[in-house]
Length: 244
Image 1 (tube, one colour):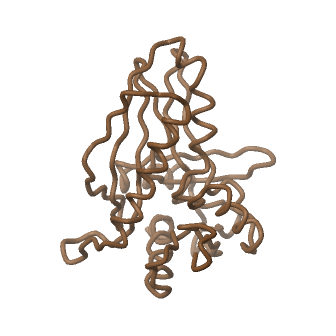
Image 2 (cartoon, helix red, strand yellow):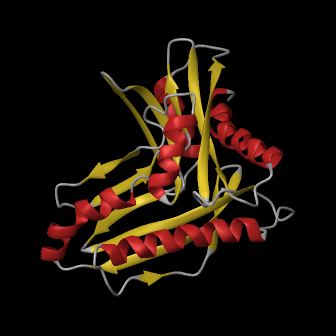
Image 3 (cartoon, helix red, strand yellow):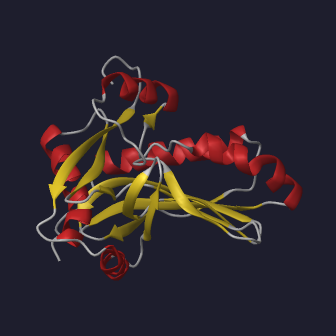
């Protein structure tokens, strides 16, 4: 960042969590759904991918009745009025707004609406969030939807800005496999409606332990201790379920 190679990079980490007791996966999914009603809750087990559970707050892309929506999500603080947003979080959220706005322009998509920035609570933490929406005709959707999805992913919430330079740094310096963390998950309905989320708060499950994943967005104004604490709070999203 000091060498002006990129403005933001998301550094991720993985932590092993041993189960104190046998885990009932059905109950785990039910607990996650009850504890995080505003998140996308999923559970799946697939050959080659593993067994995963997640409670992720970040919408990647939705499509319903021709309306495409996505969000600019950034900044992380504990919930509660005593924790107030600073210029660091607003600057980071502004970077992501600029990125998404530019993605729509790259794909020649006009008349995009952007909401005011609001606070979105996700369990024990909160984020800054603004929403993008645009109504597209069917022929435009067919021509541009998959290209739009491909250019949005990986988002600045899991990669950084600019996208290529940040992803190159991650590939050269991160000492773990992200696996399904930082990918995306969701459903495509028979009527072509889509509901996709970035896979953020998640855990890969094994017989007697889980691997928990979290990341922190590093910018020029970041404080190392605060960023580390941020990853701890994010890991606790899944830890709290296992400790029930």
